Image (cartoon, rainbow, N blue to C red; front, side, top):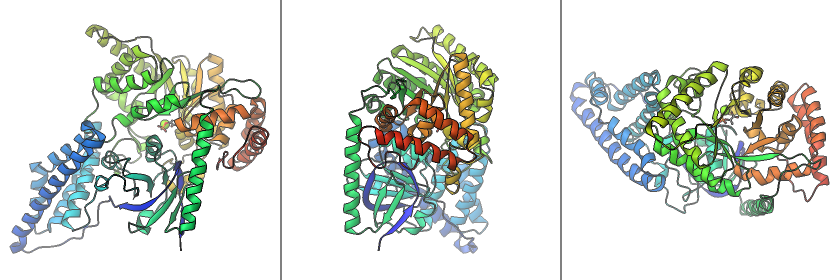
Amino acid sequence: MSQSLAGIPAAPGIAVGPVYLLRWEVPEVRYRIITDEQIPREMARLHEAIERAKARLNQVRERAERHAGADEAAIFDVQASMLEDRELVGAAEAYIHQNLGAEKAFDLVMLDWRRHFAGASAPMLRERVGDLTDLHIRVLSILLGLPDHDPVDLPKGSGAILVTHDLTPSLTVQLDREAIVGIATDAGTRTSHVAILARSLGLPAVVGLRDITSRLEGGERLILDGSAGLIVVDPSNEEVEEYRDRALREIQEQDELRTLAHVEAVSVDGVRITIRANVDLPDEAEAAANSGAEGVGLMRTEFLVVGRATMPDEDEQYRAYRRVVEAFEGRPVVIRTFDIGGDKLPVGGFPTEANPFLGWRAIRMCLDQPEIFKTQLRALLRAAVHGDVRIMLPLIVTRDEVQQARTLLNEAVEELARRGAEFRADVALGVMVETPAAALSADTLARDVSFFSIGTNDLEQYTPAVDRGNANLAARFTALHPAVLQLIRRTVDVANEYGLDVAVCGEMASQPLMAFALLGLGVRNLSVSPRGVPLMKRIVRAVRIDEAAKAALAALDAPTAALAEMELRRVLSAALAQSAPVRDGLLGGG
Ligand code: PEP
Ligand code: MG
């Protein structure tokens, strides 16, 4: 009998394949007291495990280098060199001398080191926590005789569905699109970075399944429906057929929508809407440009850093930004400065701060690390020579932050000028409005910037205090909370008053019902996943903005998100029913 598990739809598409279960968690280790006579043997076990881990890292690095590149694979060299650290190995030896078994000795040292690194103030040191966690898991697995596997072990064409607790950076760089056809995780929500990355890679994904890793053994056949957020374990042949048909229909729908890629997004009552794409990886640039997007509304640059041993230097960043800018041939490309920290600092699932979402992240970290920030700004100013680059600052909460960023931008200009580099100095600077503080001080911020982009993923988490990555809170995470709608409305009004561009680049813009609400709130510029560009054009061409405005007003007045949704759904369904062929599911779950 098949069994269905419901999670959160994170990346669309349907995959059928065997489970590749990856348990990448620090195993439990019990205290084992040894006699003095056993000390030499435990010492030998420790050293042998470390040597085996190093050999394994070498193997993993070689394979990751082949399909992810040398820079990305360097993370494994860093990990191997950590295992050669005399202080680290010496500390484990000392515990063995105090009559502890090798696995507990290593466990205690790693816990101590991870805690120590997590408290470091330099981001590159804190980033090493992820590597220490990986080593902790790897060496203990060897010492405890647990299966030692990595995603790179999957042969190409194996068509497997990767099932794991969460994706750590070192797992991410090993992902081979030719071996894996889908991803399912215990953790995460629609807007967590696993989900965003899966969408970028075009891999169907279901996240927030809570305990799927403990329900499966590996090897079972699965259907993964990334559009509905469903997993079917051990499906019957009929069920597989049914899903294969559905997958085919989805592909046909996509093809139909693709014919809309190059039409303009104009509403029935003649309002022109700009649809841009969110680009997370430089590799996606060409496909995004062909999707019919009128530019990039958000490029998330932190994916250049995730899983890396060192920060990318100015030239490497310049090449990455230039690739995206050139793909868009003069259309606007909004590039966001590093939004590292929170859920985005690659720390291997180990929280480095008690409250990472309220912590030292994004613009806060960049302003405190001017060399990291200015390197990025110089790369952006150089890439701007090749097109229309606009620089966007994340997580702004005060005007001071914008002014300090502007000072550093001016310094970056001077540095490039002194060097005689080719660059553009007149690059537009804008901010993300993704906190209630930014939305409520929009009129102060408006004096210093050229555009706003509303980050609804964070606005939705900071306004009602609902962690966007917590699967247990997924039902409470909604953009239709009356307070969120009011903050969006306020931001749009201020932008209009000051004559600034205002876009929405959070996931809200990619969901038809939510996008309809945004149009009604006065938003005229949406940035959506590349795959969502034709769909959004289809929606815009089916609706009247005056009706959207009325529905949004009713949603704003609604006392609850559920009532707001009902009102919006009623008006949008009616509009879609009157327009060209409507397919089931266009509205999705909202
Ligand atoms: C947002 O917060 O809405 C946003 C677009 O940024 P991110 O999802 O990267 O935090
Ligand atoms: Mg954000």
